[in-house]
Image (cartoon, rainbow, N blue to C red; front, side):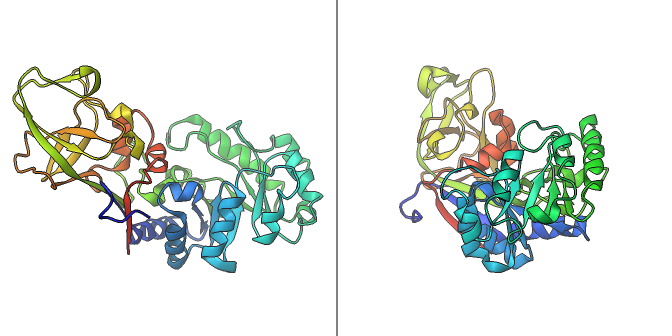
Length: 366
């Protein structure tokens, strides 16, 4: 971890806000169980610290994408938590060893997975989940194949049947109701298993498809599960960087590579040491034709100007005359949230989170 004295930006993760987000979702869906998705290093926030905080808040079911993530997580949460591995099984010598060594629960996503698990010697001693595809066409057994496994729960050691929403962030999309109906029919064929369908946005659908277990991820980290409506979650991240240098330019002068932005007034600029190598998308550049990203500095929202460079970004601070070298600029926080940055960059908040740079001085507060 980089020390604050060596870094040009500070990333702070508020574990209390993270825990509050989990508790609020758990209360919303009770008596269903609220799990936590902590894949991709807990969406870039640090899986060890995040999982430890969630476990202390009461979470006992976790989902990761790969067995290596599960092995790392087991060392953090101990033996009392269930850890499911989402991405299915891969054949090959030693590939299934982590499941036995760390008591990881595979999510079986194909008939190949089912056969591999059946022959592994682990089925029955370690629980597994069955993933049925209800419309994503990514992973999961087709419904007809899944129905053919009805009655084999005990042989495979199944304890969960699950699927994944395609468009739960769009409540009016008719595909949501179609998937709920398809999954209800499949669930009926596995009456002894717990059922799981809802992700973060699924927890806010009017149909309340909470079932037995929900799998929020993005919302835990402060992302808005209800796009277009106020964010019901607390902000978890704060990203701040000190101004390295300021300068004055005249009308018509350009900023950055290829002169994409020109000053329309006498302008004061500030440069910060964060760029696309730190996960700040190049698409946040400000040009003559469009507004790009922005920071909060001295209480004023100030725009990016010119192209975002690998290590540097230039800000127009004309409206914040008190800015000096060393003044802190907030790129992410409770005012400019991850969804705001994503919208300006033309992407999604998930991508912003998982690309958070490794050159930040990271700190955790509870």
